[in-house]
Image 1 (tube, one colour):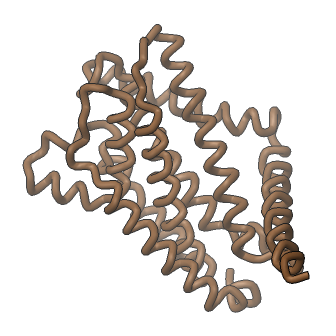
Image 2 (cartoon, rainbow, N blue to C red):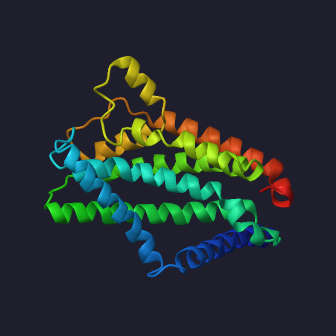
Length: 264
């Protein structure tokens, strides 16, 4: 009897998460032509346009001899972090009507958006790399373990930032606009276009305080066998991400009822 009582809440959790994932897929992707296929094609098209533009500016990448592939190894981890943090930060506001049901919690809403966003970004990454390799006839020597480690860092960091922002944007709606402005320089300083390693030590140390730079460095280590990423630190990323996640979940646990009743 005790085992059955324990199994029931676990089953309820997975059922709630699955239902929330299906709801988001139907409401978000079901409204556009092509549905989920369009959700994959749209960011891939955007990346391709950016790749063409920047490849005309910088024809010789710091690694390898193909700028589109080099650019993809930087922009894809960045977009994974950005998408997950954005989706998670809107979890409670997006799923507010369903959170009134006793079997659905704010944790279910957060996990559902995390899973769907992460799986979507992984599919986009695989399709993007495959398109570039096929179009340019590249013979890639990819270390898939390093790439998975890069994905894991980007996902964990996006989750940590997203959970904190979930509390802040729910309690203080203006934070969404403040964060959008503060987050824009990350595209430049995270090493999407350049390598951080060759910079002077004082500048390099400053840039490495940005945890998002490390998943990008790990991704490039997995994609280019000539790059060692000696300054990359997984431990630093996970410490920052887990500290943010713990803080965010603590705040949501303390104030989630106030958010549901009075928050934005």
